[in-house]
Amino acid sequence: MIWALIIISGLITFAMRFVFLTPVMPAKLSPAATTAMRLVPIAVLWTIVVAEIFLSNGAVADITSNTRILAAIGAAFIVWRTKSVILTIGLGLPLLWAANYLLA
Image: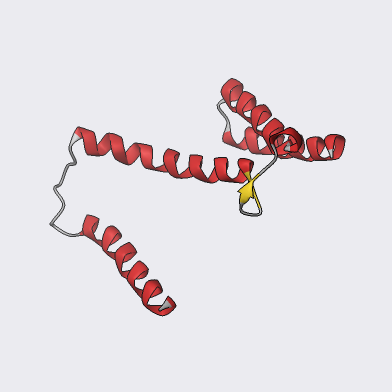
């Protein structure tokens, strides 16, 4: 059963990528499709980040002792002020370390 799911998932992933290389797709996407394609990376990244902040071992983390929330707020402030991903990562990780050290 697992192998069937792996093969089906692989075929679906391949088909989703291959369809853009075939003449089936129009040469130019509609404005709505273009807007939707630009939002996909944001939506995917957002779900990964939120899950990492608020989930711990498959369960919702305790908000009162969750140091990742403080680090996320600090990183959000850094990205809002600087608009730099590298700077946000470079300063956000030490924020997480500091929050874990000081509050844990």
